Length: 278
Image (tube, rainbow, N blue to C red):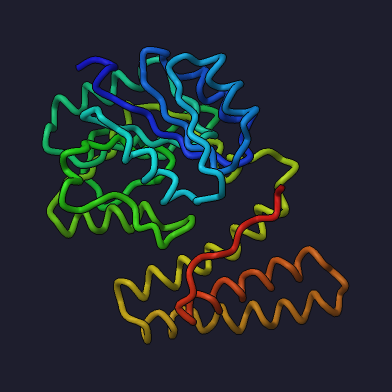
């Protein structure tokens, strides 16, 4: 296998410094598609000027993780695709190790690295292991295995879309593996720049709750999903009132967004909320 058999897909949003570091860690023989969930033409020009192997596609609006990755995957012409987050850093042998594992198990759907600590790249597995799901920050896809299944459920804006995809794959008897010899450093929870932290925190709270209810409803039914989040509804209301009387605006807004994420999901509304980072 050679690097011309793989396309790397990276969905970004307000991640300028992090995506540059990520791209610098990837062998320039690899074709890379960056899906930038904005209309940042300066970033597109900067990336494509400095990385001749990269095409930066401006989405024009914030599509989210699921729809952004699907846009990138729709343009993949190679046998394999590697989805990574913009705050991931590949090691020198990362791509080669993915190919080595793919040679061993040709009928896989996804291969992922073990969960790693950013500083020392430790993991809790010793051997190639078949699993039910993997973390979404790095997913090596065997494109042909997705032909009749599709990729990400675009109802998710962010959170649980990779778990949903893995669940659909397993339902169709597809194989998912974790390989601890594959090393990718992942900062986690911070693919955007620091100046956007609070707005992104509000967005995370809203979408985590929306996705949690939607995921449970999708697989267990509406009543089960409603009963499972009832405690969180009460908790978010109580904590909102508590922090309102303490004049703690930040905490109050966080719990307001948690409640609203659940409320919208329970009503069957789409995951419409977007961070105000313009």
